[in-house]
Image (tube, rainbow, N blue to C red):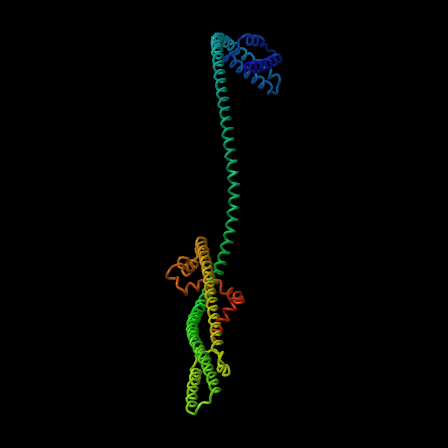
Length: 441
């Protein structure tokens, strides 16, 4: 600022010197005084006012048209101005003296203020350094904390991205599982409808098998009663055959006795000719002996009527023996038939037991499927089916364990197999032949 003020003052003084040279005014003493005087605030103001006045005077001088009048006026004005300037210069000198004194005091104060300023600058520098160090430390701490926070945020971002990917994968898996469960529910609904249809078909087959079982039981009881009747008939025929055999043996013994008597009589007749009295006696004895076998022949034989009805064989003496052999063979046949029927009944009971176990398993599977359907879809049809379907506990309960229920539960899965395969086996054919014989007999 001091250099700029000095340059401005120098330029203004040069201008005033040029103007005074043109008009014959010498202001060298003023410039020297101004140059010799120290720089101050009051002297600067005075110089400014003087320069302004001189410039206004110069402008007024140039503004005049007539040079003569201008010169006169200028001279007058210059003289007046010189007087004024002299008076002002005196005043300025006085002011300059005061300003010099003030400048000296100001220089002293300036030196003190420079020292204070240096101290202040040193303090300011130290404070600035401390503040810069604090700011640097704070910036470093802030950068470290920012880096830490950035690292933590990056870690959290990585974790959230991983969790997001895991959630996306889990979402896809859940959507796939949901689709599979939907398909499974549809399949379970289809299976439920199929199981309902199968259950209805099984119930219809159960009713038909119950009816058929009742009919078969009725036939079995009828066959059993007929077998008992046949056994009684066989026992009766055996007894009658024993009686006829005894009678035959007795008749044979009597015939041999009669033949021996006849031989004896013949020998006697050969030895001597008998009289008429003895001849009539012998004749009556022969008639008595011949009447007994005729009565025996005329007695009704139940076994002979049941088995053999040939009139030619009735008169032969071998009829009781053949009848007895035939009855014994028929008895053995009936025993074999009874044995085959018992074996068939035991086999059928085993098959019925296995079919009952299979039916209980299917019922348990149906109950499991119904429970799954209830858990998945909450459908009430499965609950109704579970209420109507028999459980394994009901199948094994003593109330439901009657003969008709047992046969019906067993014949559900084995009826077709029994009709198709078992009837074609030889034992099945033999059993059917025995049943046909029992019906035809």
